[in-house]
Image 1: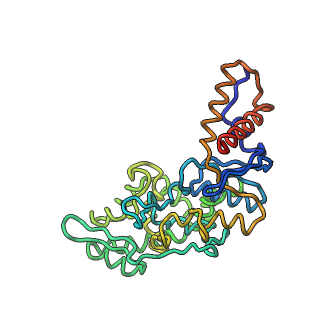
Image 2: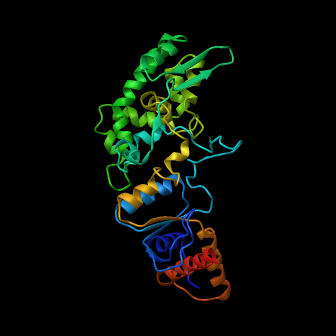
Image 3: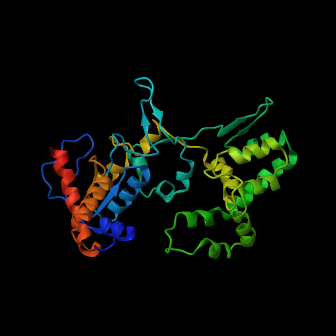
Length: 334
């Protein structure tokens, strides 16, 4: 039996047009299996939905498979306690999305489909055990005044770091939102910056090292370590960029989608990505709710292995994927 690599599996599954129709959430099951799709995406989290939207905008016919009753992944809103009271199940603030070209440059024009944000002011409030607190306001000067309550030096450091970060932020954003291989790497871009070498060193440092070097008061240090809380321990090397994440929300606040985080990805009129693809482009984009495609594929490949049927991933993987997809359709229509 020929071994099949993960790379070969993913490549075959992604590039094979699948001949089947979806079971759209909240819609009757289709009776025809003649509709074909260029790309199948497993999971309907917000990253998957955005990917599908861009692919559909480029002309590809996409099918998104989701096993849960609500799409959105980390950006879902649901009634978790009492009827009529809706809660975000994971993320609430979308401040990093406002640096993303999807929103920044209105590449998907989601605002036209009802996506609306609230920009809180104050942005962030941190109380301390000694009864004091630091409040971050959208006005930088008010925020700097908050730091000055504890240390004039730290207030000066906040202003200096914010100004320094603004000078390099376009470079960091360009690298973050440029696919690998489609632009210059970070170090090459920093080479054109007057303080590029300094920023290379800062980015290699830990979050904590930068905060400790710039702030002397523990209240100010705590705020810079936790507002917002990073995804990695602040003592880890190469987390230096997180020391400047406070300044992202200083500029954009912590935007809250009006109606809940799920408004970014919920499948309902005016919200949003699905409507964009269906109404603005002519590409096919559907969300299906079958059994997990990946689980069925594993079962099918295991069956082939046990029966000893020879197959080549280059020639037969598409048949395995297509056969599994047809099984989904049969089960969905049963």
